[in-house]
Length: 298
Image 1 (tube, rainbow, N blue to C red):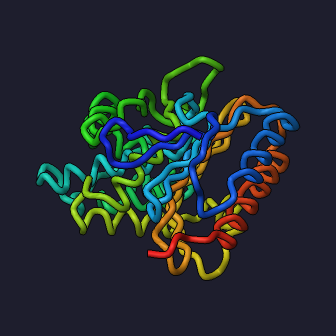
Image 2 (image 1 turned 180 degrees about the vertical axis):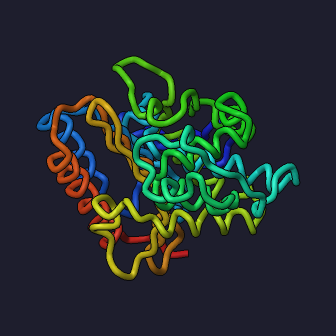
């Protein structure tokens, strides 16, 4: 493996595509083997970035390749809205009304708001992140000024790769090579680290975003299905065209610092059950590695 500082010097990046003498507290070989197996057998293309804040290192595979963001971008949209709350240009208690014209597919919460009383920006983001509600997500995108300003916010926190281009549900449709509404695992993980563990947002806004992710109601078939009961998790999952599956998460194992994960899978004809099974298998191997790690003595 080869290690190097990332563009802002915040972490040491150790790419799993190289070989060397980096010492890890957990065994990385089974994880790499499981990813290779999934790419071959599904088949698929998989990208992973794992930031270990305990050791200030990052394990990665295809971490600079582009993948569809799917609904993982909804975390970043609400982070952009919260940044405007922090700046005072919006207030979390501000309200908006939804009309029938706003309604799009997969809106399990907001469909009941159409034609009813105005809802708060906080409720919009709760539906966007916790319930992956597409109508709420589109309204958030409008409130922050559209795709260009959403992408601009990500650039302002050092993310030069993640793109916001379209509204839902179009944002979940990507042909091979289409860079609209894409990210890289490294960019997504690094941005999530700043938003949940760093200083990109005020403590109050960070707590709100963390709570919305903690109360994820649609991620049961991904990491939440396999993490030990004594681990905490905040996460956001996504699905899309080309068999895409994705999850970004911060894991909190006991007696160690958090782990930030970005996992993206695309370009597969596997059915959802097959793809989810492969993700769970990879996740189980990672969890076992962390449970059996040998952390350096302080």
